[in-house]
Length: 331
Image (cartoon, rainbow, N blue to C red; front, side, top):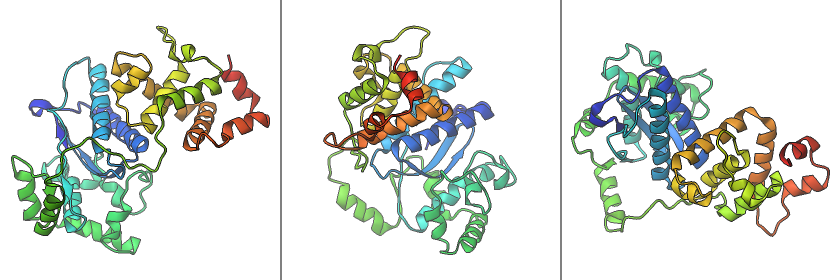
C-alpha cells in the first residue's frame, strides 16, 4: 500500500486511475507478479500481491516510479508524488488472507464513496463475481477456492463473506499508526520471527525459472536480428526512435535483475527516465505491430536457450525466414 505525500491525491481523474492499472498490468507481466486484488482510492492504493520470484521491491519501485513520471508529465508537475517507500505486510495463507481481501474491496464502501461495491470501477471486486469477463489477469482462483471447490458455490461464498463486513481484528490492525509487518495468527507470527528475525537484511533475490541474461547476450541477439552494429544499437538522435534499442532495453528489463539506472548504464544513457520511456515505446510497439511482436518472441526463445543450442530464429532464417521481416529490419 502507499498514499500521496501529505495525504494529497494521487489520482486526479479517470485517466489517472486507468493509467495506474495499465502500469500495474505491465508490471505483473514483466516480472511475474501475481495481483490477487486491488483498490484505488483518491489519495492511496491497496494491492494484494504474491511475488513468486522474490522481487516485490523491484516491482513496486517500477510501478510507483513510472506512474509518478507519467502523472507529473500529464499534469505538468514535478517532484515526489508518494509519501515514501511502500508499506508491505506479510499475510498468513488462511482466513487472514480472506479478511484482507474483504477489507481491500470494502474500502470505498467504508469511505462512503459508493453505495455498491459493483458500482465502484477502481477495485477488483468484480473479478470475483461470476460471468464477468476481462479479469483473467487477476489471480483470484486460489482465494475463491478457499470458499468452495465448486465455482458456483465459491462465488456465492465470496459475496456472502464480503456482505458481512470487516471483523474487529482487521479493523484494529488497519487502524494502527505503525502498521505491523505481519498479519496472521500468533503461531504464524512466531514462526516467521524465529525463522527470519535474526537473518541479515538483503536485496531482492529472485528465484525465477526464466533465464537471467546479461546485456552482452541481448546486445548480440538484437544486433544480429536487426542486422546492425553495436554502435547503431547505442545511437540516439533527437526526434528519432531507435526501435532496436527500445526492445533491447525491454528485454534487459524483463530478463535481468538490473534497475532502470543500471540498464541506462549499459546503453550509455544518463537519465533513467529515458530508459523508462524506451521501455514504454517497446511495449506499445509489441501491442500494435505483429511483425515486431514476432521478432521479439523469437528473440525471447533464443535467450531462453543455452548458447550451445541452435537458435530457432536463425533456423527459420536458414530455411527462408519471412522476407518482409528481413527487409523491414535490415536497413
